[in-house]
Image (cartoon, rainbow, N blue to C red):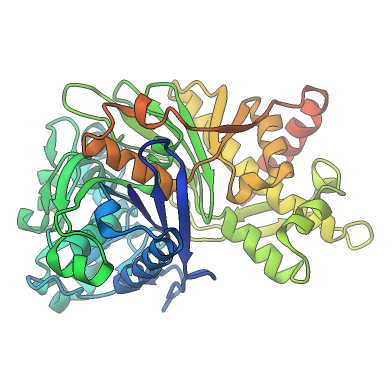
Length: 490
């Protein structure tokens, strides 16, 4: 089984053995972070064809490394960066660069729609404000690039685009539509009221297919180009955060998953329709949601997570490794001797009601603070932003006692893990998995190779358990309260 994970930093490809559930090989391209174009402050765009080229390079590497052939691939699954907008014409040509998840230009469009349609209407039907999501991004294109908008045949999310390149077929899922604010949960259909408000014709919405199903098959053209077999089923597709939950076998109400890559996420499953009245966290259809079974993913997203840690590495500790940087940070005490880092330097933050406050370092004393304090304060600031959002989730009725995560990205840092457990009071369980592996296994469910998620993820390996540090609980809480006080001043 083959899994693709289309991220903003790279495209990762994994080959999973369907007999034992083990990952035979993985590769990602580019090996350095993929470029994000920002022509203006707050903008973020990527070329969809770049994702396709990187997917091909990753696939070629793992097929060569393992000696696998096209006929060995039984199913293909796709995970992708959420909320991006891809526009194509009738010939499936991309009309403009994708406006990706961290682009904030659509914020005023979503806010205006929220106020003019009415908060109660939006929240009860969309479970969110239209905000800075895909529908609002398309509204920006309609107003600012009318000639391009006139040529739009279909709109897609990044995963839909990759599936189109593999199959020649354009379709999407309810989960994808819900993350773009195109889905009406009350009517269980496309959100006509928002489409009408923005002046979109329903024809731009692709055909809807189930998340777990044979959504399309590899075309003759793609098979020849990639060395795959024509007719191989593409049988699963989900945004990166729902898919991260899938990778950790999080399907049921009360289960929690987290990731901390370029952005950071805590994602929990609800069994009842609910939403935050201020729309500071987001509620989407989870992968197993249906009209008969409510399964909603409550998503807390912090844009400035791994991207802040990478910025600190480049600009404060460029001559040492990330592991050495983590060791350096551990030399500073809990609370970083009063330094607070507000980590919101990667666009507007939903948890702050779409305000764009930037990143700031507060409380630096030239006579006592060092690089160690700065690095620790940055990681603590990321953790504190997580906990700030988790408080909102708890107010919605979410019970957060255990956090499931892959042992990757920020969760590789002992300081980050210990601080998150210390402040939240939750036990952290780390697993050997990632998005592309999860997508491959989920494709096995969609293709009927596995009967359910329990069988598909029976081989999921738990690597480590981090319990809250009760001895230092007060120190963690005091540092967090100091951080919240600084945030309140902005």
